[in-house]
Structure formats: structure tokens, C-alpha cells
Length: 506
Image 1 (tube, rainbow, N blue to C red):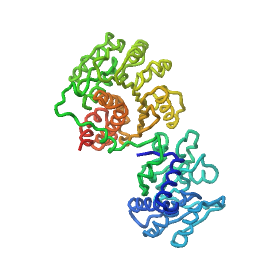
Image 2 (tube, rainbow, N blue to C red; image 1 turned 90 degrees about the vertical axis):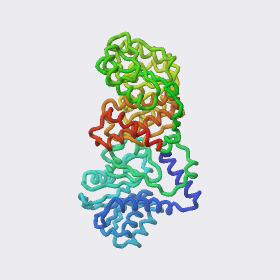
Image 3 (cartoon, rainbow, N blue to C red; image 1 turned 90 degrees about the horizontal axis):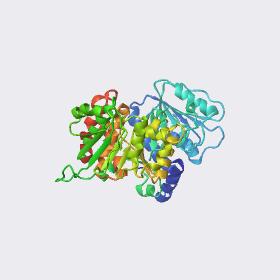
């Protein structure tokens, strides 16, 4: 599924109008019907007070049409405030304003041209935010900023249409947080918008609901996008059937360079996840003092012990392996850093670089040119800031991840609520599984183990990344459903992996 920027959405709307020979007003009506149907199910009772704040453009036109449809459905207490302070209503907004007033005289309608008397917004009020959509290009100010602050300070439930007003469609790095609507629900139309998927703008979105508005797949195919959502259907299309007569050699041999003294847990978690993800054999290179705990916790793994008792200092020959991962719990000391760059600069098999290995590179950016092409990095936001040169907002970090992938021919899994797989071609695939319960120590080590296992089974880099992230999140969802998000641990995610795999193969 494609994710579009604001310009592409306008192109998509124009293509739909042209291909289907409908008017922009008819397309707006489709959007309003989809939103009204959701609200009819969501609100539940007809006596609830509804306040619609509509802007002068297309988003406002949506809000006016929604008010009309809800009134005709039986809602008796609807107040609509149409803001026309510059006397510049769009044609479709004006048309819907006239239709609302003509067909639903029972709706309390106010067109705001100058002064605005603040309505009461209590806990029983449902606010429909239809002030500004994807066309907004700069932060809100003046009266609209004050209105947003009023909405945010009220106890009312807020539903935003397409995108919370004040939120820009892509780059919000210079936006003003206090002038963005804090929605409880966002009803986004046809396709998600980029800023609805980024970690630092998610708090404004609330719960996102993707509503189809009847645009055909053939029309969508005409609009190119670098951004996509990964769905279950996508993952099932990548799936390789396990050979009936396969043996452990068939399913690959993975090497994990993981753990230091006191951080054996990272090695255990990544190894257990790797084994649970279908690999034939796992060798773990770890310091000698981790021997007993790994032999006990993961008896299925083969151990390769470093010559140093506490840290990784001696690189391993990789000829016998189908994939390698390096980083979980290895530390960032000088000896380890030197062993790391010696190890990775000579690897000729698919490789995952994670955790402390990323931090080492962040401290030695000049080493980046020694990293082979087609390597997978798995940074969380803090590690991404060290790996690249970027501002601290999610959009800037995502762009830097894409730039690094293009420049060095890397793959980067930029971890977050919607983890993003970035490719050397500049494409980005957002994940659609996972929950906040996965924000727990060791969760990243589990992801590393899963991706490494898939690489060892000869999935392509892109498929291994997308499948790994999806399965990781799906296992987290299964664990959260059983235990509650508060109680999920990394071990619980591993324990749920068999069910996650079964869900994809049913």
C-alpha cells in the first residue's frame, strides 16, 4: 500500500476525477460518507452533542458534508462553525455550506468572518476537526492557533478528518506543537499520510483509521511514491514454503557476535529469536565468561569463545556461515571497536549491524566506507542520530536514513512504532504490526535474531527486513493480547514467534 505526500494526494484526486469522470464535489461526498459511517458506529447514541469546526478549503467542505449526513441520520444537536475570515471559501466548501443550510435547517450554523464566540466543549461533546487538511504549508497562528489551543484544553473527544489540523503532511521539524490539534481519532482518507506514521507526530494522531473512498487501484498505480505500508498480504507473497525433505543445512547457518561480561542476555535473546525463526544452525561468538549461561539458556546453539574472557576482541572467519549479525551487548571499548571493524570489513555474506556495533560506528564515522554494501542496520532514534548527521525529529532522521542507504547501498530498519525499512533505491516500507508493549529491553535483540535467521535462509535483503519487522511486531501483538501491553518482555515476544509464523502460513 502506497503512502503519499501532499502533492501526490492532489495528483491522485485529480486522476480519480479524470478517470472516473466525477466532480471534485462527488469525490468529497464519498469521503464524507466514509467518515459519517465511521462516526455513526463510533458515537453510538443520537443525543450526543456534536461541534464541527470547518475551515475554508477542502477539509472544511468534508466537515460540512459530514455534518449534513449526521443530521439526516438522526443526530439532533449539531453546531457548525465555518471559518471564512478572508472571504475565500473554496467552491466545494461553499457548495457544501449551502447544501447544509438548505437541507438541514435544524443544524446550528455560524459562518465566522470576524469575532468568534467560544462554544462550550465539555466531556460529552464530540468535536469534529475539519479546519485544515493536507494543504497546510506552515504552522497555524493568530485566531486559528487560539482555536486549536481551546480544543486541546477541553475535555471533549476530538475526531480529525484526514489529518489533525495544524499538522503538516510531511516535515514538522519547525512546526509549533501547541498549535496542532491533539486528536483522539484521525479518519484518514484513502491512504495514510507520512506524518501520521512518524513517532514524534503520532501523539497528535490518536488512533488512526484508514477509510477507503472508492479510488480504484488502477488510478493509484499511476502515482509513484517512495513510501509504502507493509501488509499481511505483502508478507505472504514473500513467504517461502519450507521444503518437506529439508535438513539443517537447507535452512542456513547463522553467526551471532553478541554479548560481553554482564550482557549475556543480549546474546541469549538474539540467539533464541534466531532459532525460533527457522534457521538450521546458530553459532554464537561470545566472551569465555558467558559460556556457562549460554550453554544453559540456549543449549541448541554452538559456542565460539573469544580469547578475551569478558569482551569481543577476536574476529571470526565467516566462510562457513550464510549470514552474520554483530552488535547486541558487545560493548564499545577500544579493543572491541577495533575487532568490530576488522570483522565487518571482511564479511562477504549478508550481515546485520545492531546496537553497540552501531554506536561504535557513530564514534568512528570514518569507518563507514569500510562497511560492505547490502548490509542491514537496525538503529532506534538515538542510534540513528549517532549513525547519521541529522536533527532530532523523526522526519529528519528518516531522510538521513534514506540518504545513508542511497550513498552506501545499505538497508536500514529505522525502529519505531511504525518501523521503517529503508532501501538503497530510496524506498521506505513502514511496518503495520507492533504495540507499545514492545518498548522493552531486549526487543531489538529479538529483531536482530529474526532478520539474521531469514537472511541465513536466503531471503533477499529487502524481504528479510520487511518480513523480520512484520513478524517481530506480530509476535509482540500476540504477546500483548495474552499478557497486556504493560507486561510484555522480550522473552514473551520470542515465545509468541511460533504463533506469528503460523498466522502467516494459514
